[in-house]
Length: 276
Image (cartoon, rainbow, N blue to C red; front, side):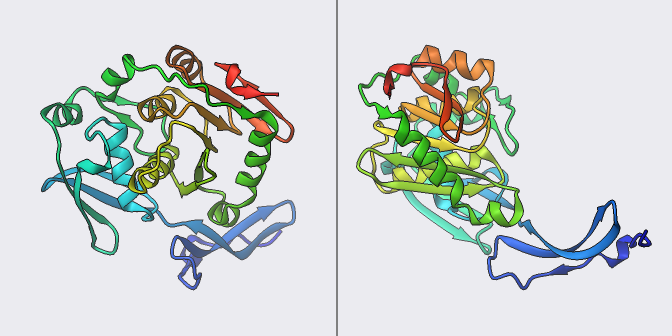
């Protein structure tokens, strides 16, 4: 067997053209021994969000679509009502500082500092008092999609993901509107990716009430909260769902679809929106 390499042989190379991917030298171990080879890893950064001159939070994420990220976050947390509340967005410090000035109501500020719940997210995953709005909401729409179209879209969704293909280390979200408009984002956090596509749609003044959200991660309660807050009627993932996700989706009018793989999928709630 090849003699193990010591950790001092670890090295970084920044030659990859994609600034979100870094090339490193790793030690691959298998039944034949150990060999040194090149591999790719995702580059996450600490991005700082500021609201009206005060630091809001720091988020570990991919420094991409930062403006959409903070817009989606503020909307999801019920801090602002829509994109028209935003006055300015400034990105500085090589994309690691995002400053927003916005019209925020007293209730919006209150939402930021109420009791928070650490969710099952793989990144920030913190919800504030958006649950107060969520508790009273129900998504009612006659919008429907054919099952074969959902599965075809999911296959296409899984086929194109450069960051995942190179690193295996990101989540992806895609919002497909009735008019065919598509918004796509990738991030190390599934919440971040969804906030980004929601932010992109809002910044482009698109109505998402007739749309389908596709995601790579598990569908838990906080993912349903985001859909309810924006009245996105259908959410689909190739991954599993949680009990609270199913319960919340059922109570608030969201069509929840999990394990959408190949030619099959599981519809957990409000199946009337899925045509067969």
